[in-house]
Image 1: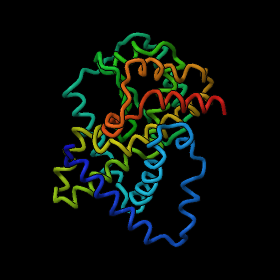
Image 2: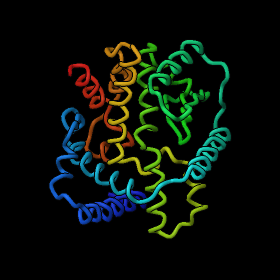
Image 3: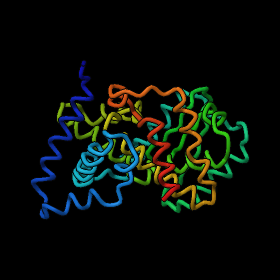
Image 4: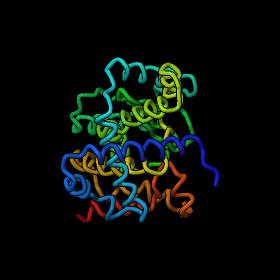
Length: 272
């Protein structure tokens, strides 16, 4: 199986910083206890998600301790990303069910009570997609808006995207790119350009699949607290899993967990 450069970089980074995290730990048994607490992913996800979860927590700890992004850097990345989106896609001021969509976004955003001023952008595309960028920019495609069957389902998706921002997934991804770029000799300016072009797809498989589970859980709790019907939150995954082909190879190379596993996790949150 061919190993891509990005795969090598992420594996190199994880091993290096996991070792450093372990060596610097002042409480040998505290880390394991902390990692095992309140871990719904291990209980409801794929068999491989358990080990990935623990590795991901070590990676997160290392990234959080490594360095901080300045507000200027965040703004630079956010502006660059927005400009690239405008170059590649048409953003719409008018779109189907605009009033309901904007009201749902306002409801979820209000309950999130974040210091970030989230902004919603609608991309004219048949693709079924949603993503978030640093600075609170949330993008939904018209294809996704046509795909969802209720505002309850959309509230969960919007909560999921806000979760990516609030759980620091975006900042950590940027840090990871910057760190591995340092290891492999890329310059800061070059990296910021690359980040702006393709941040959403960098270093996604397989360990960053854990971010999707975390955002799902955040989105579930946020949309539930906002007052939407939890029994509709898994509808999106139920539709996607109908055409899903499960295999270990697909799992290792996918940017997202299997929809069937994500659906099971949402159902587990409802039951508990």
